[in-house]
Image (cartoon, rainbow over all chains, first blue to last red; front, side):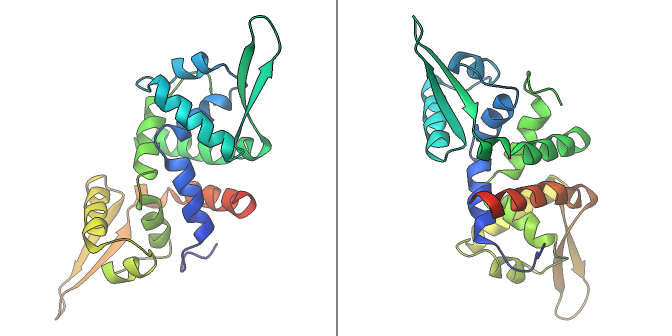
Length: 102
Length: 102
């Protein structure tokens, strides 16, 4: 890896992952598909409105997929796409660093 | 790794790393110790004031060390501490993800 020049892709990626709540949402969904309320349960302090906004952004970025099950009542779950799941390595690296350094 | 409960250390770590400009500063310093102006050169769009603020925060967090060389004129360089260098794994994981997905 060349550290002597900035990579525009890196800038984009860190702006996505580093946005408030986003890393936490991805971490939660690495545990498997979840409903909105179950995502929220693991994220103390996030408001419904903020979490809704972030989920929409992550859908647009094709990191998260929203799945509607045609049951009664309708069940909606969020899951990581392939692009989203591939952030596992990043999330685990952050977790390892934090275990030692925070 | 347990994805089924949020880890407070993870929250702290991602708030540090994800803060605007911070990931980029660490990435630049992984290339070796640098002067302020040489860090800035690799970060288009950052102001002197913002970069100064971030460097101070990173010093307080003991991620970055400020070294003053008693030369004439005085030379000041910034380098990663051991704690800072250990973020290499995180930065590289983000770079790899962005190479494929951005």
